[in-house]
Image 1 (cartoon, rainbow, N blue to C red):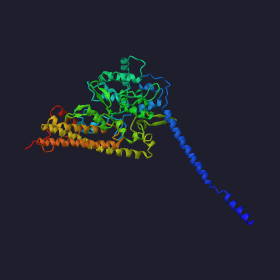
Image 2: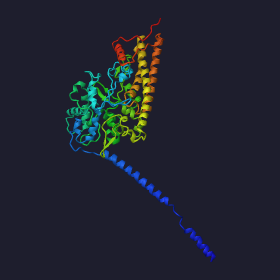
Image 3: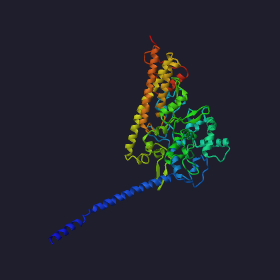
Image 4: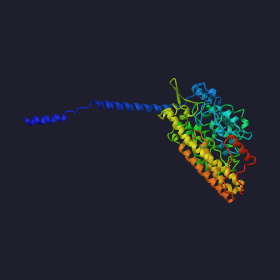
Amino acid sequence: MNENTNHTNSDDKQTVPRPRHPWVGWLLFTVITIAVFFMGLLFASIMERRNEAKIRPPLVPIAPLETDNSRWAANWPREYSSYMRMQEDATKTKYGGSFARDYLEETPANVILFAGYGFAKDYKQARGHVYAIEDVRDTKRVNPATPATCWSCKSPDVPRKMVEYGKLRRKDETASFKEFLLAGAGDFYAKKFHDLEGDITHPIGCLDCHDPETMRLRISRPALIEAFERQGRDISQVSHQEMRTLVCAQCHVEYYFKGDGKYLTFPWDEGTTVENMDNYYTTRKFADWTHAISKAPMIKMQHPDYEVYHTGIHAFRDVSCVDCHMPYRTEGGVKFTDHHVQSPLLNIANSCSVCHRWGEEEIRTRVTSIQDKVRESRDRAERVLALAHFDIAACMEAGAKDAELAKARDLIRQAQLRWDYVAANNGMGFHSPQECTRILAAAVDLAQESRLESSRILAIKGYTKPVKYPDYSSKESAQSLVRQFSDGKPPVLLTPSK
């Protein structure tokens, strides 16, 4: 009896369930709820991205080559209204904004670096897309010999004219927009700037980036299409997110006018780094102009914003130009892309703060601090480059021949190309600060090598005293100095030996 009782008690102890803590169920419920919530967010984000890339035909039909931006407003009033806000031409950040900042007044060394070229006469910050026509017409860089190629990035009338020329060449109404565009580009570039003034009247706008039938983003400039084709890539196959950068890359790039036809070309055949493009120009023996002071063959970099961006963290994270410079806005529950293209520092809440959870003032301070460091490096490079040009001029004064000066001139060409790669791009290096600082360091190094070569030549010629560098501390004094060199009456740079 006792044994049975004991046995039963033993079995009972084994089958009694262990008490369950009530918080376990609540924890499980909370975890599942959070997981479902985030899965919902992920799904919503995916669907939103897909929705953005969908074809949305306009309610009011738009002509296939409609260049009047106001005609698009009936379908896209919010986008057009925000676009027109670019008429505000007084916005300002420390290194940017939408006002005509005079770069030559601000940095007189630029006059020396571009001596003998149009940029030494007039070099102002662009005021924005809506002023593109006015700004290019008013610049002192335009003259009767200026090719129509200079209109390329200023107006939607450019692809319209190219298509018109393409239709005359192909005589085939069934060809695509792209085929007509490529067929007519050469005829457009071959004309003179002033020949097309009456035809180029609308500032940068809708047709430059959108297909009017579907509103899909598309490329309307042949140079980018051709650059991709030479690399073996089909630009029509890129993702919607990449296209949100490439529509900007049609213009915000380095380019040059190739051959007698002044054919707009991107020097990307060997790659898009500054070294790749330097090699491209070197192997083709291309130069934009001969420097008025040093007589070195020089390259003017344009605005390689896309190339610089491509080396930065935002490109690595697949952040597009549009994400920062044309961020989303909402009005009355409607989400749309803000077409007021501007510096993100003027719209931090909708641009930077979407990803960076700091206060607006801290973001602005961080960005400006990065730009200040790049500017400091740029200033050092500008000073050394200017002195290097004068050093070569001193060698010429001492009687050095072109063959003796070839190395010093080649070094200064390489150095200034690198400086200009950083100086000409927008954002004061912020798109890729580490790469910009690296390139400016290389510019200083090459310029110093050029100066050492000049010092060696002067020593051989018997001159060991310092070169007398003239004053170029203001825009006026620098331009006066350049005129002396251009007129063949340069100042004396060498102290006569006693």
